[in-house]
Image (cartoon, rainbow, N blue to C red):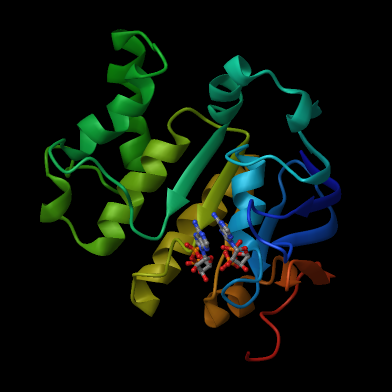
Length: 229
Ligand code: ADP
Ligand code: ADP
C-alpha cells in the first residue's frame, strides 16, 4: 500500500537530511506505529506520503502509484484516498459535528442523499450518536478527536494517517481513541500513526518503525515503544 524505496529528503536550505535512505513497505490493512524523538523524521515521512513534499532522492509508491510521477492535478484525487487525523483535531469551529463530517463529503462532490445517509452511520461508528448538533467547543477533547476521525474515515479511505492523535488526551480517553482506530483498521484501512505515547504503543503490540536522525533504526512486528529517550 505504501512503499519507500531508498527515500531521502533534505529540506531546502538545510544541509542535514530529514530522512536518509529509508526503505519501508507497508501492506494493505497493516497498523503501523512510527516512533522516534522529536526531529527524527516522523512528520516528514507522513508529509511525503501525502505528497505535501517531494522526495529529494528515491521513490514513494502509494497504492501502486509513484508519487514523483503523479501530475499535480492528480494530487487532490490521490489525497482523497488518505484520511488524516492530527493532535489538534482541526475541526471547523463554526460547524456542528454533523456539518464537519458532511463537509468532507461536500467538498468532493458527493450527492446530498449519500451525505444524509452516511454521516449518521459514521457518527454512530465513532460513538457520537446524539451529539450531531453540538459545536466542537461543546465537546470534550476525546469527542472532538472522534469527530476528526469520523471526518477522516467517512469517505472510506484506503489509508488513515494519524499524527500524534492522542497527544492532547488523557490516558483513558486515548485508550478509547485507540480502540476506535483499531476498529477502523479492522475494516481493511491501513493505519500509520506517529506517536510519542509509550503506553499506547506497548499496549497495542502492532508493527513499530523507529526513526532516529532520519534513519529507520528498528522495524518490528508486534513491537514495543523501546527504550525511553
Ligand atoms: P513535531 O515535533 O510535533 O513533529 P514539527 O514537525 O512541526 O513538530 O517540527 C519538528 C522540528 O522541525 C522542530 O524542531 C521544528 O523547529 C522543525 N521545523 C518545523 N518546520 C520547520 C521549518 N519550516 N523550517 C525549519 N525547521 C522547521
Ligand atoms: P518529527 O516529526 O519526528 O519531529 P520532522 O520530520 O518534523 O521530525 O523533522 C525532521 C528534521 O527535518 C528535523 O531536523 C527538522 O528540523 C527538519 N524539518 C522538518 N520540517 C522542516 C521544514 N519545513 N524545513 C526545514 N527543516 C525541516
